[in-house]
Each structure stands twice: as C-alpha cells, then as structure tokens.
Image (tube, rainbow over all chains, first blue to last red; front, side, top):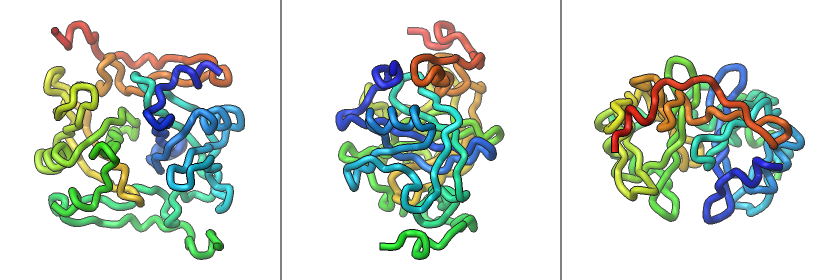
Length: 129
Length: 129
C-alpha cells in the first residue's frame, strides 16, 4: 500500500490523525497511528489508532461501541499529518462522554474555560472495568 | 496565564495545534506550538507556531501576509492537543498555495491520491528567497 510508505512517521513511528465529523465538520479528536493501524484503517474503513499509553493498537469503539466509519483520508503537504473524515457511531468521540474531545474553550485571556454542554453518555456506564 | 501551565507539552516542549476555518469548518493545517508561541497566540489573537525545522517561532503569515486571526482556542480532554478556530487571511493556509494543507485525498485502497483544485496563490510569487 503506497500510502504506508509515503507517510513520514515521527521518531516513534507515529503520525497524528485528526478525526473530523463528515456531516457537521466538527473536529472530534486527534490521536496517533502507526504503520499497522493506518493499514488496518484503510483496509477496514474503521478508525484504528495506536495508544501511546497502552502501547498497542486501539480499535476506536471496541469497548464503547462508538466506532468511527472512515469516509475519506487526507494527507497533508508534508506527509506528516492525516485527516480522517468520519461518521461517529454513538455521536460521542470522547472517553469523557462529550461529543468532541475539544469541549473546553479557553476564556479570560487564557485563565479560564467554558465547557460545551455536549455530553452524550455517562462514561461510568459505558466503560465497565 | 493558566492555560500555559495546564497544557501537557511533549518531550520536546511542544503541543499539536489544529487550525480550523471558523466560517467553513475546513481543517486547514496542523502545526506545533511551544509555551512561548502559545502565550503570544493568546495575547495577540494571531496564530504563532513553533517551527521544528527552523527551530524558532513561526508567526504564521509573516512572509506571505496570510496571517490567521484566532477566534477561539479549545483544549482537548487530555490537555495535549489544541484546536484553533481561525479566520485565514488570504484564503490559503498551505505553503504550496493550496487553501488547506490536506489537499490530497487517499484513493485506490491507499495506492493513489486525488488533489483538490483549491490553489489560491503561486508560491514562487509569494515566497521570494
């Protein structure tokens, strides 16, 4: 697969991938991919990331059911960032239950935040440990 | 400024910043910020990045005139990615003259690309060396 060789991975073998809602244009999250997760993403048309904290493939939604159907993949000019246009099943991308991970807006010249009222699910009910 | 302390910088002192067109929702680019560039971005309401290749502050548009007016800044759940909602002066964010850096869409199961027809300027005319 040509894409896997065109991509410029960083020193850890990773590339940032931005997930954008195909329908609304909302930026939902940014995570990381390695070569293997990118290959699986292209092949299965579902977003697969690489979890840096767990150091393994992260098939988005494997626990919550909130998978991301990948409609298109875009590579940037320097070939070191990916943009995925996706459909977010379950409407929430964030593990906090928010629709988007970017639910905090900076206010007061960098000294405060307002939080979006976009909670879709209760994380305690979704992630059973 | 509280934000500067809340942000989780990576091992190189950097955090990814996604620039999204406030009006259209288009994702235009992703670049990196350090503490100093983030401080200046918040204070001046113009996007200032940190250039990893040039190893210095990169006041977006300082050469091309294509500055980014920052309308809002959003911090993600893990505090390690920023989203800027901006107005792109000159309509093009990419140094190639394309409107967005993500002008290549992956096709053919990862073996080809289609290029967006969104060239706004001729780089040779804008960047005089």
